[in-house]
Length: 288
Image 1 (tube, rainbow, N blue to C red):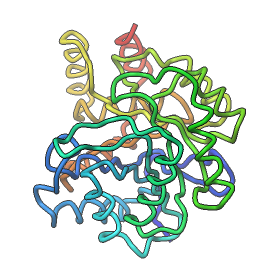
Image 2: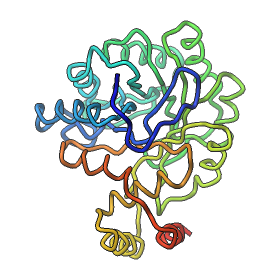
Image 3: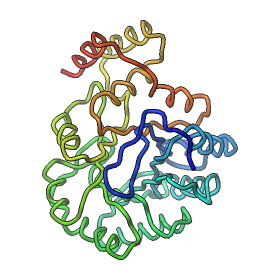
């Protein structure tokens, strides 16, 4: 069994329990989600340490590397401990130059699921996201055909739970008309608050909201506020930002990434950071 989980857990569906403080494996690549790790031994150690620290939620994708990260996860953690959720994404492929390109044809999506299964060494994916937008943008248009392809694999038992990444509220509603959606993964942080209504909706519907890029897009003035608050608390800006995200909603889950064991420990420790009410109010105002 896994140890106690820092930050607590969230159960968005029967049979799926996520540590609210998770780990995003993209940073295990050498550069911008491309190439092998700079230090393979350290990369394997990071994955093992995450589980040892109580993380039960690892986020990955076959297009990280490509393939490299999933193979690292398999090498480090298989046979996988009971209760560990490995969440992956489909809808993107990486070319030989490291660029990401949409790959949303239904047959290709099904092929990507099977590729993730093979590289991770799994019989079924615990959680599979359909990624429709880019890293910083929300997808547009209808997604019924694409999500329907994944729902078909869910019925076949190759996927246990379905999520959406880079999506709009309208796309969430469309997907929910086809199959249950247990998680949404979008860009959201102190400075980028356009998803505020969707964060609240996910909380109301007990949908996990996986916020990524916790320090991205802050203006110099916003960064200064974060630095000052963090200095007063005696923690790092990253820890403050992560602690705020955990407090923002009862269904936010976090997937900060790192290729360093020391940095991983700092991220996990953010789950224990307590933000006084006046600090929360000051940070809430950063994004308004």
